Length: 513
Image 1 (cartoon, rainbow, N blue to C red):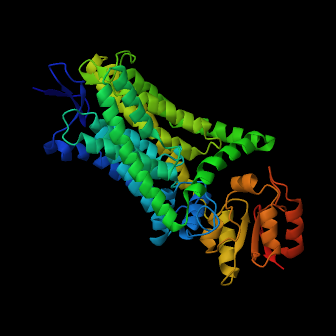
Image 2: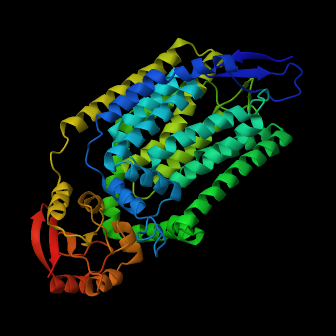
Image 3: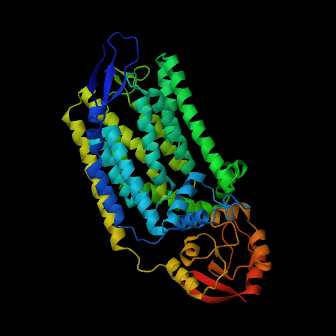
């Protein structure tokens, strides 16, 4: 006979009185599932409503570049046909869909849907507190959420995978095998959106290790087998779809692995790069602490009770969620700090661990009797985080630019270009091209790929001197040179073949003579 006792808003514990099986997470019976999903609904509505306020913000360079690359994804010489992009194929599929639905506004709506799903899944995992955590951090500009990047789009896949993983640990669930396979499938889907979002893989490995520590060898092997089968199946489908569109596994390996290694070497070996990287690291750390996310994490850890000392996943009569939450947190912190470029949207990757920690806190509070003060500490930290988010979001709305330099360049090109014209933006800011309705004959849209793949600008020079030379070249400053780039030959070709026709801030627009 089995009994159960609730520990979380969406989770309870099953106990086998015979002691023959491991205590496990017990999700709510079907009759109460709709009630558990409803926990996150008001917070999901709040998240969507808030994100609708930034629906018409100008596209960021990443958003514009991914839309441009995805809209021209076909068989070609680069990763995605005409352009080199160091991102996985499922991200390009999402951006291609957004482009078909209308472009920038459609992309922001896709981001709002991703935020909504993330909040609902967080509420299902850990109840109201977890839903509040997800809501606060999917809308805070301090986490770079005003842009729809890979981290935001992968977030609901990661949280869905973690929920499926928790369901697969329930020995009383009828469809545990399906849940484990679904966890693997969602883990791989998250990876195919953003290659460093492997939180579910880390959580599954931690669960298997904990089962092995508790001498539950058969359960560990079973979980690993089902999880891997789901991941492999999804990965195979993703690779096949990409291959049919013209992106081979070899090109994906080059973009996702080889390029990232080379980029790390280029950044670390260049003093000018180190200065900019240090500034972004300081800004990222300032944003992290201003968001109050570390306070929330510490408060949740305090509320979980005693350190993880007991073997396996057991915590008395309960599964200790910290066996999964802490390894996931460690990976996410490492991913943010080892990313190299330190953009604010890296911080979105911390949300799954924060959700798990709050879920573990709810579990620990009822299990260890730490009392009301630990709950008040956690609630207080969430209030501080919510206030911080409100201030940051209000600042974004107040300082919304009327017309940025990028927008003025795009407007100029859109007004003056003829059918068949192409342009190159040197270097980065492919949003200018997308907003102007132009394409580029140069496959490197961002500055880092230029520094790694074409540091002497040999390829760009060949294009400028050849029959496919772009009519327009947009340069930040008066030279193509920047750190890590030798522009001697390319500048000569630029000044010989092109003339300056307009300037907007630091941007100089050159037209083919």
